[in-house]
Length: 514
Image (cartoon, rainbow, N blue to C red):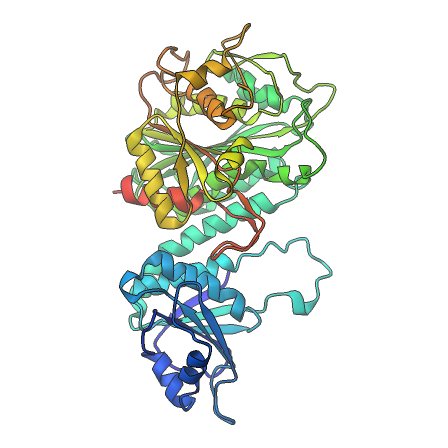
């Protein structure tokens, strides 16, 4: 990540200067000082370019200083939008937009002295998130193709306040980077075992981590996740991560004093579809079928990194879905940890089987105050919502509203989708308690209905055996369309997005801390 610091306002003697400008506002602070030192060249250039400071607008001014005068080699003006509507989201987007324009410099200074300290920190967050790059396996890259930017200094009128605002943001950014790294790893490197090892690295932050293997799963009766895993030579794992920031058990073998909030992730490290094998075209993208699990791991790192005053548990079911002589077959019936049986119609609908057992385990062991699962669950959600929103399904209006609000505040948008008995009937089986697919119509909804059967009292008609009965506030986020982007976004470069880390961290901060 970029080396980001906060300094007192002073004109830089080299590198790039980023100049955030509100719409139709006069240059002030460092911007005015720079314009004066450049003999009015900055304002003339902005006027000539018709730069108004609108959102998304930018203007680069090269070599603005008179001959022999020390100063920045370039100025990048970025628009913040209307001054009266300036927000953290706008500042972050402007910071993300500025980053590619100064990437070829070794260092950059941001003239943030006209912005409140918290917005200066948000601007830094945008630059940090946009700077992400997964280059671990590049060995022949030309120097000119590598980003050179190493340091960014934000000039602000209140350095202590800006630093205080930045500290928790930095921890969240670290969590996002961790999630992006995991999703970007190739599947021959990241299998269930190595993904579990990455979870154990969180112990350095004070997270309690336990890893369950096949023996423990078999003892617990987790026939659903074991059925998915049986076709691969890579054995399944379940990571159980606890951050006990409210109970004072950071890094210690303690228990939550009350009901924790729980997050559950699908961690299918590669999904061929199994016997119901996928087409070859685009199958390489199935390395990111563990993006829900990566988001949970990144979230736990973020909560621990910023020392959140919350008791939270994160569970990730990690498997590889492969075809082999031992693979699960269409037509098989598996018995879940809850005691319910599932007829497997399509082995490519494996994520819901993984989540079913992990959700039951979570409720049995932790009796959570609320439970949120994340999964790249269905292609149908992309048909419905494209790549702009995650699909949100919930049995609790308050929890759903909290997630939607957090999504609006972080740019990780969610759109609530329906649930209901009509959709639930789609997964009725002739020989078992349910089947794992309900056909093409409403495919993402019937998948959510399947998961709801493993929440508390299920759909209100069935009672789980071995799972916590009664109402458990639950939300399911289908992130199949938002886990990866094929284009650059303001604070998300092309590739893994880390979707869910910031969203759920914001929800925790707003409603579950303290």
